Length: 596
Ligand SMILES: [Zn+2]
View 1 (cartoon, rainbow, N blue to C red):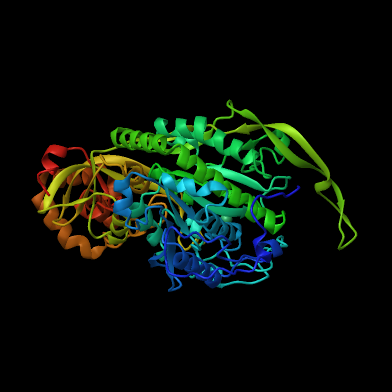
View 2 (cartoon, protein in one colour):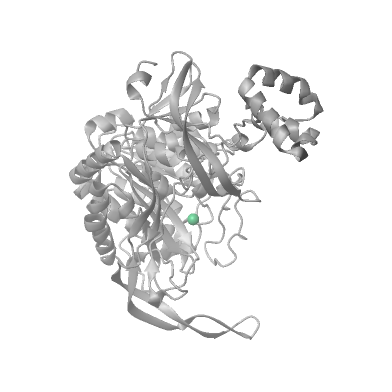
């Protein structure tokens, strides 16, 4: 692809600007930071932070903030660009501006966005091509590097199929967790800092930058968006009918036409590609639960590094422009969506692709053929770069609900489950604490069947299958236990995380595994005899049934162990709470609301 680009080739420009005083009116005429992506170099973690510090020093409209911690012991940074030099999130919300959050380096081996964001910040602060006007309606927040620990493990020997850049970080963070599978369970300090960032800064639009090697085609940049069907209609309709078409059209005006992320049907893109359904463990699936317009760019790993950086740079500009131009509409549809989320009774936990709905998109791919290896001289079957084609292919982007759940009025989480409660809190969930011990009629789940991964996945033994049954029963809760009203903007998060069958629920991620373990070992052995006699004496009806059975069943009458088991099985000793899901569902709001 020809790569004409409107931004200057910064790698070759010496930085001559010296800051004299600090004045927001004084806009430097030359680039403030120097980048080397044109030469296939990606910045190191420390270089990225140094460059943002420099932008912070030069521009009053920019500030580099330390926002919480990461697992490796270094802070998570947030770079904020605010036209009016407001850097308090509450002030920004009062101001009524949209917040665009760009997250980079969740996978530091995919660093295009790290370099592109620096270029983007530099250019918008310099008002290049008039892009400074995007700040009229929008505050731009950039996470320079999310997986700091991963970025520090820098090496040239990452991603063996990647020629450039010459070095980059690794996928695992400071404790080798894949942060883009940690958004729901939030085991890392990185994810917990990000949760607080979402709650405090309240992004309207969110971009997470990646690189993919999952396909081969001619496009440099592909896009994953939140699946429109999975948003409340107000927001999903806006995304499907207005935002996505304009983003794709915007990119057509750049040297990098963009296509949806390429997931094949039947191994061959000519037969169609499908949109990727995002569960809460990934960034956009997480953003979806809070009605945030979430996107992941996936740059194509086989393209030259400068093109990858420039294409995602253009997407950042396109996204900022759209956010600026549709600021009021975004505010309205998000408000409406939050109201719809708040009012719903039925929530969807899972979807399946609707293969009856598709639209045709323009796709430039490669046909497969016999390719001769330059290394071994042997031939193999693969995409043949000498056989490019352009075609119209079907794109499947509709999903239908498959598992739905009726929301209770409240959930109660016993305070014993503090790791869950901590996560509910940092994700902004409104909760009350019981002011006294109380016994309530609840709807109680019992886990009847589950199938857990044998090996650890991202640090936990995930439950692939969860089956349950609901029973009505009385349960006692204690002063200080947590009541979660299901009538708040966080409803989608609450339901998906607390319903055990949610795809990334706390149960799925093994937060509640001890409820599946046997602790009390009751055996109707010989030593049970004394208790058995006492129990029969106190329960004459059972005693009568027992004696009748002995008379009518000679084998039973001769079976010492069988008789002990019979009494045991008809007594509360045999009753088990194994598999009782600790969180209860409650529908008696009147009474409960007196208890906090
Ligand atoms: Zn990635």
